[in-house]
Image (cartoon, rainbow, N blue to C red; front, side):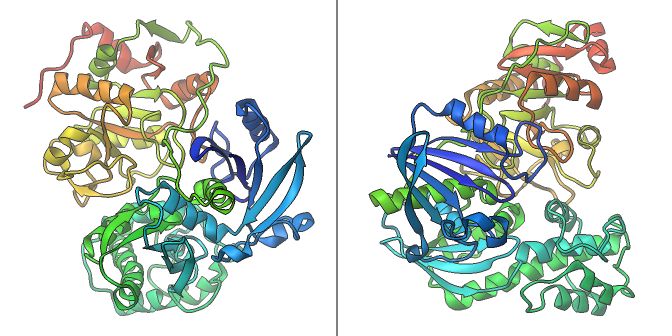
Length: 541
């Protein structure tokens, strides 16, 4: 069965599933479009260019009814976890009569997580869906019946981001209806700076205010906290950074207490929703001892909703809720123009040359194969650098045009992850934190000595594995800095023209596309590298 599914909301995406296998996922923000974009007409043509035939089923994910007033009768809503709420009709598509299917946004998250997990069909489990709007636990039985155990808190992602907005004087709290989508990730970084666990009396009041029991907390309501110390205090304030960690723990504890009281022990747990991108919280769930296993998909946010709706349709029509998939299921890189030799030197393709450049202190863009699904760069649309110096992290944050408190993640050979980060199992999607076991990797070690690692094997990403192996041969470390290759506020770069422009404007030293090396002639570091005779660095001990 061939299923084409789309998520019409923010983090818009198309997903195409054929006979139980994810063939591709086209995400609206990718290709240097604005983060969290809804789908556009060019996205439709990208999908049509990938299809080989008319699908059997067309799916539309549920969303807020007011966003699609013409389709009230044929689109499921945002909420609803039961299978009897799905919509099934017939529709014409490219001259062919096809099945039309729609189910709720809530179900899309739950079905996506189950389908992408390694749990066999028929495995009972729990699921936690926590995102901007929903915060609830569910039980999924052997027949894939979904039962909501209980709502823990409305808007956990929104409440979390609201603390960042509270302290940020650049956020206009008087007019905003919702928190900024980028703030939750920034607060996650700031929470790691916390040096205390005890809240002050004012902080207790702020916590109670932000976690109050109401369906929607508007930023305008934060005016009630205007006289409190943390209001517009700024994000560099040490006391606010302390509180960020305390508040993060309090929000997690609310869900942990519910799980301890309501859930049976030793069942597996699925985590879905945008809060599933919080690596600290994911790690905490694995450490609670409540669950036999914890799985978080790399598309935990709404970028996975189209996949989840496709799986729901597959389950409805075939009875199969499982999916074969690969995280590198986006679109191929587009060579839309030639690289200008007036600006770039072209080198012979050589993984050893790239490794030597990185070991010599150069910072490179890296594009290979299809782009990653989900928001995390996992080595196909990345900026790579040596992991040793704190100054490298500072330079990367300048290149990325973001705050200096933001950490840089390491990508590491799977075989070396235990030695350098105490991680004795594959962690291929950058969804958990581990403690660094050495002081040598300063560029990828956060202020609290944690690192949000991605492990790589020859099977998971051959090109990156070969580069890490070559870098290890030079330096003794199969570890690199890995951050996303994108313009500020945009999704991954996916064309030669954008990559060339980014390299020159943001002062990368060069870039590598499908193994081809292009070095910026205007880079002083690259010119110094040439002057030094392109010698590999001395192996580190």
